Image (cartoon, rainbow, N blue to C red; front, side):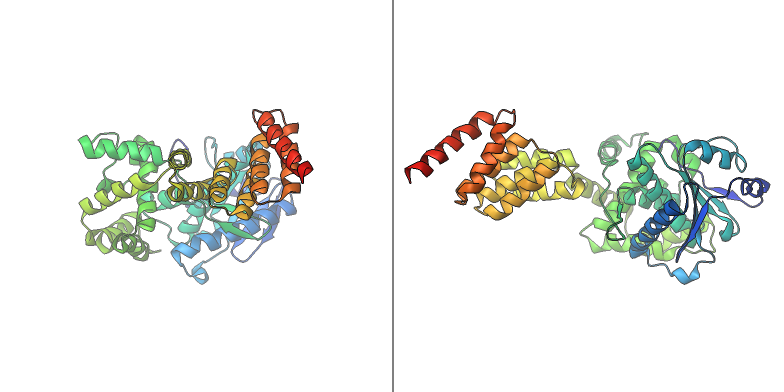
Length: 404
């Protein structure tokens, strides 16, 4: 995302009428959404279900009254970028590489337009990001840009589970390294590569695009800090800011209201220092794994366990944290839990030789001889560095079994 997506506020757009005349996508209506998809009603229904789940997730933070919406939120999804470009070209000049929210003075005409991408993860990220922008601007047409994009980035890693019909929040730490580096530079020398927190509160798209990395990193950081800070005074700043937003106000008026009713109650230096302290405690997935491994190797099992569990929250599909959590449970003689962690590590793509060897040792310690033989035999059958170790332990078990 190289630039802030300028929300296109269209009072009159003759091209919209022309675009509507092309092959009409299938339409599905739900409680809050009206979804169109060129891939058919099945895709429209799937997107509709997903958007409703995200609506619930977003509103669990904002507590807007859905009954105030003047129209259903419209979403148009095309099969590919060619169809997407064809539709947009009849409405706005140029091309776009991501979703576009077309905002009209009449909410019933506003629409989020996107297309299915070859990378499903990118599609989901864009859907969540721009879906939040649509959600927020449907209730508050002119919010402060930092709050709009800060929350949009904050929610980006959230994902929808079709089996439960629910969307779950997952932390998005993609901008954390940039923010850490920028904050250090700002506090040390007031670097020009950093946007001052006081400036961030009233920045517009043009200003954000001049320093786009800093803008996204700091907007996300400020929102994340104000939500997750252990200091309730900081939490209150954000919720007072949300409460100060008015659907009738201009952007400048909303920025002024947020400043007066939320940020003026706390010294800017307190927010800066609080943000810095908070960000220093936040670790990325690689940082958590490294910290956990270091703690484990030095025998600090509790801190290691905390780091690996936090790592699972950031990337539940990585096999590494589960493997180490298995080792920690084994060390605590909780053989059942150790097996669950090892099995999960295996399911997530962990080294079959290594994990089956660990499962064999764990089963042997739990006096489950048959299981130990099974796992060790599986480890032996895998060409890995643990083949010889597994074979040696298996021979030992077989000898003990024969002696009995």
